[in-house]
Image 1 (cartoon, rainbow, N blue to C red):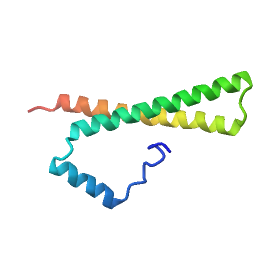
Image 2 (image 1 turned 90 degrees about the vertical axis):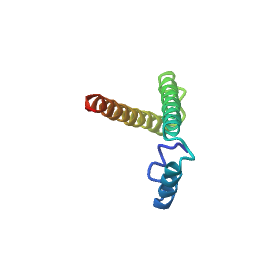
Image 3 (image 1 turned 60 degrees about the horizontal axis):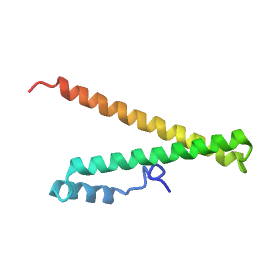
Length: 102
């Protein structure tokens, strides 16, 4: 199961535990963020590859379950839209920081 499927899967207690770890300095925030971002990008890439294979199978007539192929394509589209929105928000935050006067 992918982490995109588990977006709301963490309980409040787990989130607070992660927050406490970050505040205590046991996990550097920047490195943890970079690792999470890289993991998410790799996952989106895998989903896109699965979708491309499903499209190729549909084009060649090798698809066994059209419903599963359609789901793979929809999941790839949704994951790409989510990643693009995250990128847009990160760029917006970066630009805002650049405009901040010290």
